[in-house]
Amino acid sequence: MPADLIFSIEVAVGALLALVGAYVLATVLRRRAIARGKLLAMCAYQRPGSHAWRQGYVRFGEGDVEWYPLGGLSLRPRHIWARRTLDIGAPVAIPPGELDLIPDAVCVPCRASGKVFQLGLARTAYTALRSWVEAAPPSSASAVN
Image 1 (cartoon, rainbow, N blue to C red):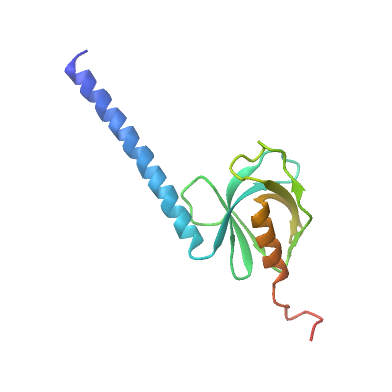
Image 2: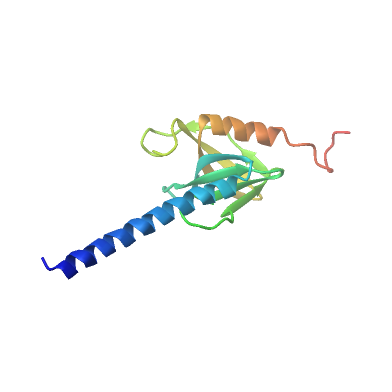
């Protein structure tokens, strides 16, 4: 092989490795930026009528739950659900292998502001979500005095 061809291949492989490394670094920094000191958990999202799960992160904020897709570089949440409008149902076990990134996953039917969807969470993350929703302070329109 000519020396120029070997050099070109080495440069191409080096550039590819640098791009992969930069993407991994950006993904790690993105996850840290999304968390910003708040509870962050792996969470899959499924639209009604769809059989595909979208992997991502769920973050519990002051009054909102935010869902971020796993891939990508955006720091903006794809979905935001207000704590007051979020209604979560009983968890149902997800068969092993359906959500490989989430161990011991459960499917949680949800409704928020008239929209129906499902979340796939680890059992511990589901417990945290349920506690977070139930611990909401009474709203100003509450019947509790």
